[in-house]
Each structure stands twice: as C-alpha cells, then as structure tokens.
Image (tube, each protein chain N blue to C red):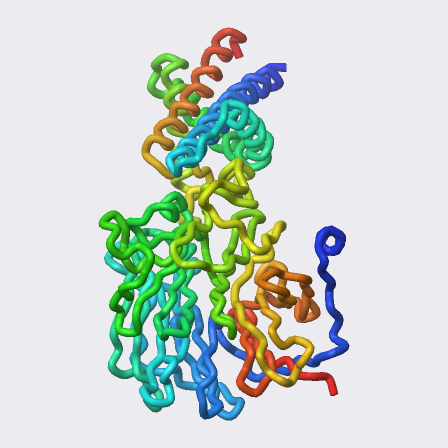
Length: 146
Length: 362
C-alpha cells in the first residue's frame, strides 16, 4: 500500500514536471518563430501546446521519470544523512534532475534532445519545471506521510 | 512495419517501387570505409572520399591500397569527416580538385573547403578557400559542392543541429547555401553583397542539413536536405531566397514536439517535394547518359533511411512521378552519380562500403 502511494505521488510529480516542460518548450519555440517575423495567434499557441503535450509524451515523460526517480532517490538518502527539510531536498533534486539528464545525453550524443533547453534561459526554465515537480513530490510525501 | 510504410507511401504518392527487370548491379570495389562522394577523372579513374578521412583512387577497376597523400586531417566524429569532392571545370588544364571536410578549430568544428592540385598520388598546392562559422557540434555539416555554369562554387552548410535558428540569420554560415569563386573570393553579384548585416558569400538561407546539390544541364540548381522527423525536402534554388527552416517545416522534432506549427509563411519558399516519413536523402545526380535512355533527364536521389535511390521524373520543373529503386540491396546509399560511361554508380554507407555499378540487364 505504501509503495502504491509512493508510486502515485511520484507519478503526480513527474506529470507536473512533464506538463510544465512541455508548455515551456512550446512557448520558447514559438518565441523563436515570432523572432523570424511570423505572427503566432493565441489559438495557434494553444493548439501547438496541446500538440506538443501529446507529441512529447513517449520520450519526454520517460526521460523525466528516469531523471526524477534517480534524483528523488538521492534526495531521500540526503534527508537521512544530512537532515534538512524534505521540501528543500526534493525541490533541489527536482531542480537538478532535468539539467543533469539533458547534459548527460548531450555529453554522450552531442545534441540537446529537448530543443528548448539549448539556450541558457531554456535550461533555467527547464530546471524550474523540475523544481516544481520536486516541490509537489515533497508536499504530497509530507501530507500522505509515506 | 516496413511493408506497411511502403504501402502507405505508394497509396499517397504517384510513386512505384521498381523491380530489377531493367538493370543489373555489379560491384566495382568493396572495402571502402564509409564512402561519401566520388569524382570521375577524365582518364577513367575514380576518386572516392571516405568519411573517416581518406581519399582513395580506383584505377582500372581496382582500389589502390595507398590513400592519396597530403590530405589535411579531418574531424570524423558524428557526421563529420571527409565529405565531398568535385573536379575543377577546367580540370583537364589545371588538375585541381575541391574537397569539403570537417576540420577542428580549437574546441569547435568547422566546415572547410580546400582546393588542391591532384598529383600522381598526392594533393599539391593545397589552399583553404572557405571556412564556415565554427561551432561545437558533431552533426549537420552539409558539405556538398557544385559548380554553377559561370564556374563559381556552391557549398552547402548545415545548421549544426543545436543551432537551427541561426539558419535564418544572415551573420552566420549555419543552414546556408554559399557561393564563392574558385579562389575563395566572393562574387560581386551575390544577393547579400552590400548588406552590412550579412555575410556576402551567402546565396540562400533557411536550410537544415543539405546533402544533395545539383546544377542540372538546363542550369537549374536543385538542393535536397534532411528534415527532422519527416519533412525531407527537394528545393529548386534561386539566389537570395529563404527556404524556411526552422520557421516552417513539414517535419517535427525528434522529441515529438513541433519545430514550427507552420508549413508555409510569406517570403519563404515551398519545397518542390517533401518526404514524410523521412527517407534521409544524401547524394544527388541527373542522368544524362545513353545507356538508359528511359532515364535521361531524370534526377536520382540516394537515401540512407529508405535504403534506396529515388528516381524523380521531372516535367516542367515539377516531379511528375517517383520510383523507389535498388531496395533489393538493403543498403544505405550515400551517393549516386551518373558515370561518363553512361552507367549509374552507387556508394553504400558502411564501414565495408561498396562502389556499385548499375548497368542494363542484357
């Protein structure tokens, strides 16, 4: 039962990160499109956002799941070893999770697989998306006392 | 799954998968290490570039064991390495060749084009005539070369993968078609000469990874380029035009997200044909020989992912129909060229690559 609860909380955290990353990714790509002098309507922004949520689902959701599973596992060890609040450690782990995963992939493959993370601003926003996932994970862990 | 994909393509496009009834294929040489391009010498020898950094010579149907000497070192990581080779339009008089390669500039990589005189088994009088904007990437170098009828040289440069937006900016070489003279100087009539915000050698912009470049016998410039996931394109090139990448695309990112939600935009050129799913077009030629009269005037596109050659039947600057050829080889085809003997030549893309000759069955 405890494991199921943990899995549920983890899923919510991962989905939070995934949805935020997807939305950030779409808006950054659209910002590039507008910089070329093409006007993008609100309707096109919304439909592009929905397209990307479904389009990114197989790859990005898997990537976030793996990255945050590793990050939250390390955070739980840190809570035991160094004390400190769960909110801090899980949020910090979330913050680091996506840049670490993307930079690792870039190191081995030579490319950035999530286009929005190619710029410093994009990487910063992606880190915040991970932080949000970590924060959700910490809050639910405390609330559900897992 | 492959069969289903082909069936889908056949239903959607005026295209057919051709059988081997009209030709046979023979191996000229094998044991080439990722061959990338070839050039036919007037005396009958063939030069072949290997992406891993060697320039090889085929003499009387045999691959000479010693690579051609004095070739500058190239960076052969990822898609980089020794790329294209073409002969000077006045090769008979000056024995000069032009070679594109990926060179390393400190930590960054850059596409370079060198000009050299071909000696007995070495390159002499080597001169670098073009160096692209340096960047740290192992992918998307472009690197195809072709001469215009006025003997100026066209060079394709890729977008460097992680730098795709720069294909729309005029101050870098990323994602551009470049035009220079044989000595590396910029022609006065290039479209952006006089624009202080632009590099004067730029001829067209908005390309992703162009690995097919052809000036056909009627003087038309054709360029094909790899799209991302889908959206490979055949473009008819006109100086000064914008071919759209990444502002418009018929493909999506490998991640599954949009590169752009748009496929058209004002001021940006549409492809003559786009291929989705991707076929990964690489080499390119026009058939002008007499051995296959039914192919005369057709364009041939080598493909890596589809493992085929596409024969494009052209009518008034449009692709009237397409045939998928040589799928029976089950090989990635890097390059296709019409030889001076009228046969079609193919290079297969592997560490044990082959030079193949296509000739009539009878």
